[in-house]
Image 1 (cartoon, rainbow, N blue to C red):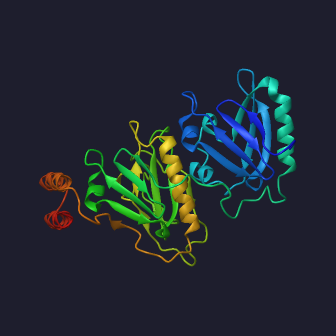
Image 2: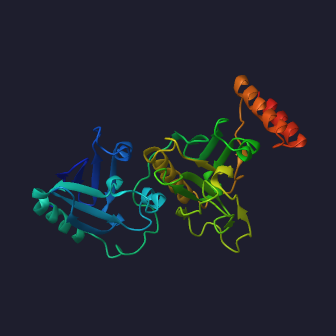
Image 3: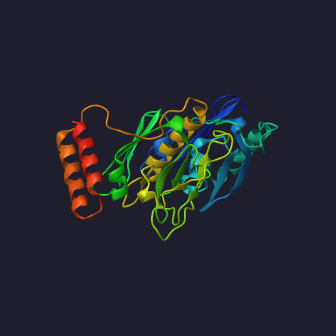
Length: 325
């Protein structure tokens, strides 16, 4: 580079070039993609890049793109190729008159790529969004404190299967991966993959609705479960799976759910060798709001009257809810 701190300003973002990395700062204007505003800024080490391209853009622009190595960025891994070009944090759109300057920086970046640039990274080199994080899905509220993922169901959106299972808490030490399907597609969801089920056979229609296949990229931490894998099946659909929340009707937008998925994935990878603890436990620690408990018991009674919950299931779940008071 010419010198440390060189800056190349583009549309929605500015790249600041350092001796060993590129600091990408995103604008916060009303036209800036919400994902960029959520990320704010990202430092990308040269070691995290596999190549650099400069191509013509639309309406008198050029596009400078730094291509990350596979496995180097948890956000890219979680997205699994589902991000639209306009939301790609590695693209810098510039006016065409800056093409010569952009070509200079592209050449400088290429010269700093390491000998293993074409190889997958053995660890994440770009920082994940920081916890704590939370967002509203269609059927529940998802939270992540850095160590545990929690799902608390909404009675207006959650399926009977999720209500029967109860609110869930998943320690990251008991997870092997994350599936994220963009809410901008036909159906979207965030699905956690417990250890031992990464090679499980999903039931028919493994997506969020019965007429759709799984389709979403599953990002797992390789090598977390040595030896033979158990024969198991995962719940047929994400809306029936207590380890998943589904998107829709404005719930689970990309700028909230994707950084969340990336943060969980990074924590899973970092903690994969930690001692195992129970994969999913009911999140009922401490006292709960009596009004909330009463509402849940009322809804449980409706399910019982409709024949969707057996007598034994109704009694057991009611006793469990009363114990949380």
